[in-house]
Length: 445
Image (cartoon, rainbow, N blue to C red; front, side, top):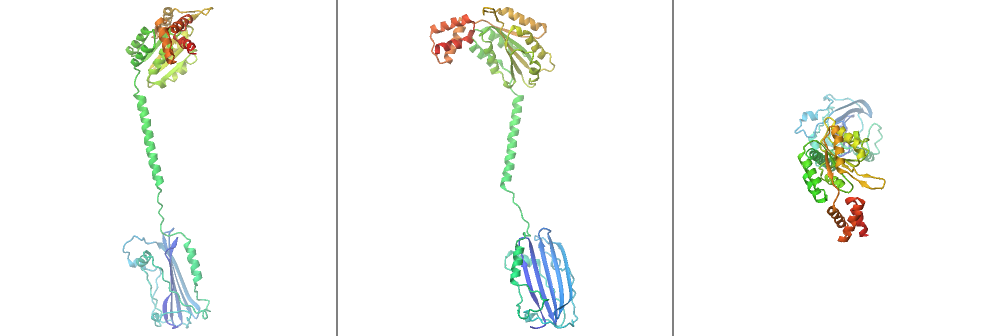
């Protein structure tokens, strides 16, 4: 082999590795026994987004190192999207290499193990030629996915006795490449948001909209709920309350003509005359069903709590059932407590009072007019207005109507004889229409 030569001994490019792109260039220049090893290694790192450069120069003579220079640095990576980068900015080496025109008078060195072409011979000058590789050529080669050609020197196994010459075998290169492939790619990974996340956001949005509409509609319903119209209740009372036409008329006139926010109505009568049934019909037609409250004696224990739970937005219906004359004082105190409260809400107090008395022989007696006067006088003493409606005892026609209605409900065909027998039993027991159902059941069985 000639002692004067110049050429590349190793080039490597790991462009498809998972973490970094690594470029290695090694060049050997020989001139009359003087050997200069020049290597340049560049690594493009993804995590730090910088390019690391390592340049080393080793001059040997007769297998002995004469001088060695190593320079390392790193600088930001040039973006791939920059169009027409200036070659001067890409080709500048971080280390200045001065050209030498003076001959180097060093001992000759045998480099018979390297194969170097005759075209690369040089004179006695130690001139170093700068090899530049533009970024654009590298990018073109990468996009074309062309394999990297590596020029390897032919080794003479018999002559490789010099320990200073570092030549890597094919097996070591393969192991190094496999290790580098395990690293992460340098290219930035873009995570695509799953469509499920977008659907979840949309479902959440529509759910909130539906909930808002529901809340707004409920608020509007609460605010604009209709007021109590007694006309429908009056029609049903006239059809289903037998023998109490005068009482139904008084109730209708009072509710339709009285616009007061505080009303007290007392339905006074004996057993089975329709007081409780009339109260059920009124509750049925009251628009604010969630504002209906029912109480039974004793009333003194529930007065404060009964007032505190009233709705301040709509009308309230308070129903007091099963009252007797002995409960009159508690009833008056109950109404007075409500009446004397400041800023009280709209309230209708509906009381069903049975003033009947029972003697030791279990005989019932009732003085309806006297009972009504006692109730009115009790309320006049506390200056609280009250409307008393008398429910008279039922006549023969009203009792017959009650019996026929109960038989119809039971799907039982009753004859006139049975009706007369049931009427006599009801009159003797003074149970009114409340006893009609039980009496009809006897004939059905």
